[in-house]
Image (cartoon, rainbow, N blue to C red):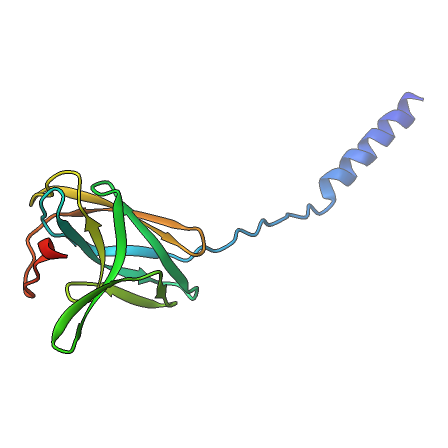
Length: 160
């Protein structure tokens, strides 16, 4: 009886060691790699206006849509578009901004930007502003952008 038990044990052990082990592979959903590049914000006074600018870089084949923005300096942060109409600069809130696959979207002076409406405190050169973007996919993207003076285009954000 001991020989049969030992033989059975050896046979089962040998079979277990020689059988092929099938590995399972988990599939993780791919989330678009979108990043905030070259970000900065303009200085501004408490209770007035300021803005943040950057480049949204989408390096994948998956498009997404920016649907909202928030910041640590203002309870009212909006996505805006500035453009010229009939010789005047016009600024309008945008409900969304498409972010195409394998493309960049520029948020710049005189175009798309994140409007920081009536900041709680002064935003001074050398400070940084936390910006959080929310996308239709549910993804959020955060960045700290440095505050520096505007260059080039002269826009008065105080009178918005």
